[in-house]
Length: 165
Image (spheres, rainbow, N blue to C red):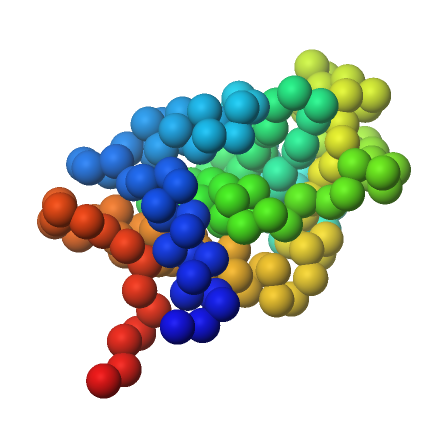
């Protein structure tokens, strides 16, 4: 088993997928596990593009909660994938060290999210902030979660990468 397989299996064990699949229920479980609420905020893709995340999604970690910002025009399935990608970063431990100064929100995004105090932000993490390996891991986490969420309910479900015999 690869290290990546073990990390995905641990993440699935830590916060099991609801059956039937329900993004809100899963986010509530992730939030309970992390001890921090998670809020979803749709914004126009152009606002996200200026943060360097190519218009898909963004994780804003504040002192006591997390905000996942996503493209308001995305389809329901795409929203699930964007949100799961950001949750993958959370569960796989991709957050920045709190000792590093937080990057400010881009001006137009800050104007769109006026309730976010700049002083409350620990980090703003878009696609360019995690590195290639972490981005790949979060993408695989989102893909695998979406696949496993649609499988019929079994006694135990775990992430398994392509098994070789």
